[in-house]
Amino acid sequence: SLPDVDKTAMAEASVALWVLHSDTANPSLADIFEFTHANDFETARDKIFAQLAETPSLQKVYDEIEKPLIPIVARMHDDGVMIDVPYLKKLAREYTAGLVEIEKRVYKHAGHEFNINSPKQLGVVLFDELKIGEGGKQKKTATGARTTREDELAKLSLAHPIIADILAHRELQKLLSTYIEKIPALVEKDGRLHAEFLQAGSATGRMASQNPNVQNIPIKTEYGRRIRSAFVAAPGLVLAAIDYSQIELRIAAGLSGDPKLIKVFKEGGDIHAEVASFVFGVEQAQVDREMRRRAKVINFGILYGMGVNALRSNLGAGVTRAEAAEYLDDYFKTFAGLAAWIEKIKAFARTHGYTETLYGRRRYFHGLTSSLPGVVAAAERMAVNAPLQGTQADIIKLAMIEADALIEREGLRDRVRLLLQVHDELIYEVSEKDVDTLVPRLKHVMESVVHGDALGGVPIIAEASVGKNWGEMRKFSR
Image (tube, helix red, strand yellow):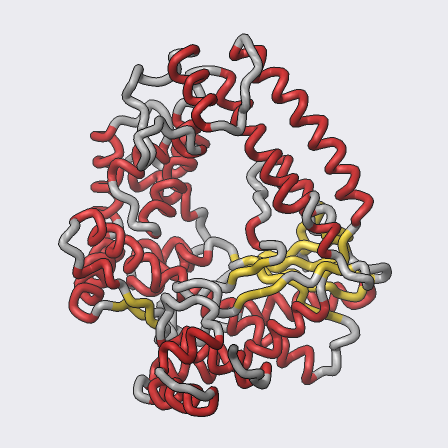
């Protein structure tokens, strides 16, 4: 059995080990012993910190970002967020009834009842009975069964109305089991949910959360968005959500030094409309909604190293492979600085086995040395995305530290507290009478955390909204 270890010392050693080896998310005491080949915690801890000191950039990430964050993350957990349990109970009844309605529609489409949750039975109904998709060409799972995975079904959504119902059924079921039924049981006597935030939660530097995963509540659909309304402010307080606007694209512009991208952000333009105008060769006034949507897909696709095929399927029906290839081509011709940076990052990763964020955080990629081209390509995609996602993670962590220092310095703990972090968004609980003074200050902290010309002068912009619950927030402008 493992020894009892001081909580703070354990948190520090765990985070330090993760800074050294980003693949080891949330290292446990067993991981620490295994990594250091030590038999006692003191020796293990000394070994980790000695190794950290050998790489000044990683030591700096630990000293300036991760170590100061440990008490802030602990406080977020201790403070928790107030939950409207009766509202969730009402939602549970409504969504359960909704499931029954959807099931009836599915059975009507199929002409008979079957187990919707059985991939095998569903496959028979969709592919054999209703003959959806290209007969017999469906993707197979590892065991040779035809796949009914969400992303594969989504591609068939226009082929038959049953698909939309199946996807809605899955979404409702997942929301019910993951959040609506689970959260009330996790609410403590103080009426608050104390979710765990994992500072060392991912290989890129981003935080994760569990019990429940509050960062993953889907907000693309009305079903998901309504769950956020259960997260409420205590009496006399409001929730203030401040999030970064298009931060990964801004980081891409800054790190790559691409003059055209930097210019768009410096001039405060609409990045997706501007890209659409470049890629589709039209004046900006002629960019329509569909062009802007496609440009947005391309913009974010580039950040995730999307190839032609992935881009084509993400652009949606009606786009050929040749068109997707042409869009990519035009994009990289237009933003040659970004294209050159991407190649430079891949070359650096191949030579050194890792990439770095603006602040020196590293992520290692073992797949780059694989003999399988698919594995190498996937590692290269991650290598391009890691400095972007990792720099974003560093920036929001630094903002949490700066904001906490402000709260501490001015004795504001009873008037404002950080409750949640959702990747590029911070959610505070603020006393109603202080909203007009404190929210702009917190927003300013978030916007001024990147110093000087570190990102080529690309402005970092945050947007604030306030409300009595997280689902119904109104834009805060002052």
